[in-house]
Image 1 (spheres, rainbow, N blue to C red):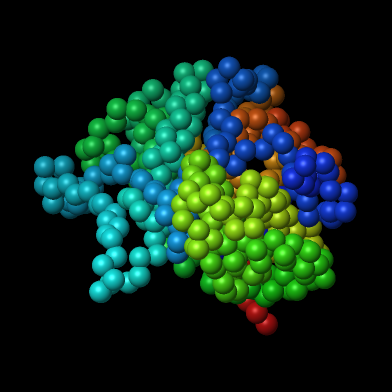
Image 2 (tube, rainbow, N blue to C red; image 1 turned 180 degrees about the vertical axis):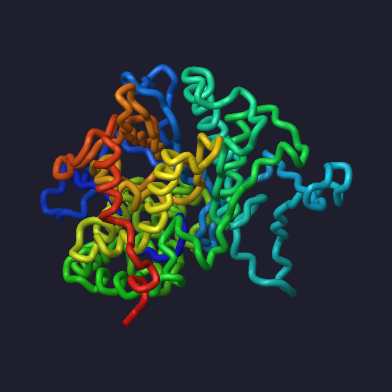
Length: 457
C-alpha cells in the first residue's frame, strides 16, 4: 500500500453477517469472495504452466507488489512486536568502475526502537521490535524468494528462456520505486531466480529507480494535480457519500477502538485495511481500546476488533478501489492519469523489443505496490475475483510470444493463473491475445499529452 492518492477498490458478491447468513439489505459495496486470500498470492507453478501452442516466448515483463510488510499507519497503543532483521542487508560504496577491494567496507543498517524514557525524546508511539514503518518483513522477503524460485522453475528449467546463470546483466532490466520495501522485494526475488550470485561490481544487477517527483508506477498526485481534483469529485459523489454514511457507525466504532482521528481516517477505509490485515497476516492478537490491557478478560466486540470487523473493512476497502478506478463516471480518466504513463512503458518495451532496440534484454521486472497492480488489473478488465485488493507479492506477468506463423500474441498471468476477465469485458483471450488487439486495449488508457491532461485549468 502506498499513500499517494487514496479512496480505495474491487468485486461484488454477498455481505455475510456474524451468523453467516447473507445480509439482503446490503448494497453494491458488499464485496466478498471466499477463495480470496490477502496475506499470500498465487505463484506460477511449473506443473501448471504450459507454453502457448506453436509459439516461442520472446520477451517477458513482470510487475510485482512488494511482499508482506509492517503497517504504514501507527496505532499509539499497539503493543505488538514487528521484526524485520532475520535477513541482513549489507552495503558498501566504491568508485564507479572500481573493483570490490577498493571500497568503504561493508555496513549494515539496523532499525533501533528504544524504550521511551518519558524525560526526553518523542512519545513512544511505535511498536516493539526491529521494523520501521512499512518495512518489508522477513515473511515478505521469503515470499519473493519463493516467487523467484518458481520463476526459475518456469523460465530457466522448463522453457530455457532465461540463462541458468546471469553472466550478462543486460538480459535483465529491473525497476523499483523509491520506497525501500520494493527494492528489497526485487532483491529477494532475483536472488532466488539466480541464486549463488557473486558480489563483485561486474556482477551487480542495476536497480533503476525514478525520483519520486516523476514516478509513474502509482498515482503521482504531486506531479499530476488533476488527480486531486478528480478524486475530490469522485469522493463527493452521491453514491460514495451514501456508502460512507451507511458504513459510518462501523468506522466510528473502529476509530474509537484504535484511538485515531483526522480526515484520512474518516473519508476512507485505507488505514483500517492496512492496520487490521497486517495484524491478521501475522496472527497477532486483535487490537483493543487503549483502556484494555493485552489479554484482558473484558475484551468484547464493542471494545476490540473482531474477525467480522476485519472482513467488513476488507469489503469496504475493496468497494472503494473499484468505485474509484472502475465504477464511476470519472473512472476512465482517473485510471488513465493514475497508471497510464506506466501502461505506455509496458507497451513501448514490447514494441521496442520487436524492432530489435532492446538488445539482449529478455526480462523486465517492475517492483511496485498494490497501487501499481490494481489499476493495471482495471485497465485489463479483470474479473471481480481478480480485482480484489492485490495480495502481498502479487505478480502480474506480460509474456510476448511469437507464433510459427510470424504473428505475435500476448499472454497475461496473474498470481499463477491466466487472467480472468469480467463477463462485461471479454475483449480478448488472455492466454493468447493478438498483439494489435492488446495494443488497442492499452491505448484507451495511455495519455496522449500527460502534462496538459494533468494540469488544472
